[in-house]
Image (spheres, rainbow, N blue to C red):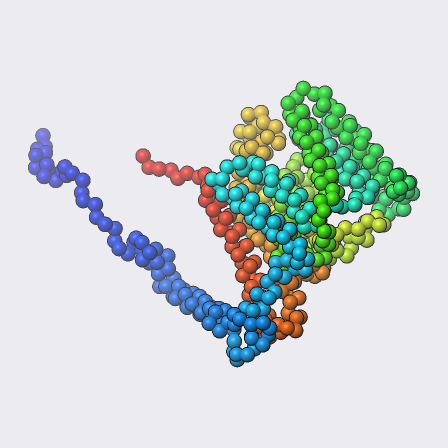
Length: 504
């Protein structure tokens, strides 16, 4: 038998004292040694990169502040001193144009209200601890766009009877989607074959009316094409057939979809009443808009409109329905295959040639629509990448629970796909913000366009005027892009739900 008494001296009866970690592994010095000087190659690259950053920072600091001119009434202040730096008096004199463009001076309070309210609403939506996110989202997506449109344009639109009938046709056409949302794609189409056939006939009449002159009839003093009346009539019958079954059904999903559609129609009608009402505001044409105002209008409209459209296109491309999948593929590949400048030229120059005679759309509206469709194609591929990353077991588990297609998509699949796609989606948003400078090619003066326009003012012509203007424009773009980038990183970390295995 082994005697263990000789080993008792080696058994520790208390914890060993805790020693401080080595100084070169903690704190700022530890981080620098581990990340910047971990190897000879990293040390060389760190020194070269640091030297370049210091040189660039000193060059900008010297040009913008040390040698910069801050006081003056015209170009003489910027050329009085040889080898002077940035011409800041030019920026002070033209900064209001950088923001508002040619918007009337006495009406710029309307732009200020839109910018301030939008910034506050967006900040409260972005901060997780602020409550009432649902109502804030409704305000941002419904009330705020309507308020902005009325304030910036003045409202009091004079809609023609043809335009009203066209909007009515779109509302009736949207009724065809009620069975799809209630029973899923396949069952919804099967229940809606007759209505879809009538909608197809209406679409055929519309395409024919683009190439063949149709007779017109006088209704309440307005001449309306016979094709328009036929299209609205067919869509009315299709809408009645589409919602008749859901109205008589006891299915909760059917009634919920029908109530949702009725609510959406009431909201659209309320919007029409508001934009045609007279609030006493002075009308301001979009040709007078410019600067940061146009940049934000085009960018925000493109981002907000392209996001849901991109999700639908991504779902359509992965659909089992051949027609839906083929349409989504053609749309995505067509818009991704042409540059944005071509899209803007087509929307500004070629699109009016394909519209019925007498129909005209605002140039800024055409640019917004073209930009939104272009971005939607890229957004669809970003979302599709997230959908493909979802394991097949997620779909099978949802189907085993008896969830319908839309419930499975909205509650299980899409939230995970969007979380995975956050970096790609934000990248598309940043790219769109920078691509708004291309609207200058169709005569819209965005931020960069206004900066270029101010160079022609002989009062401020100097060797440093161009450099200063471009520096300010680049700085403003960088602020917006960097803010979006940092917020996306914050959301990625907040939504990170992965867990590491812990040892037992």
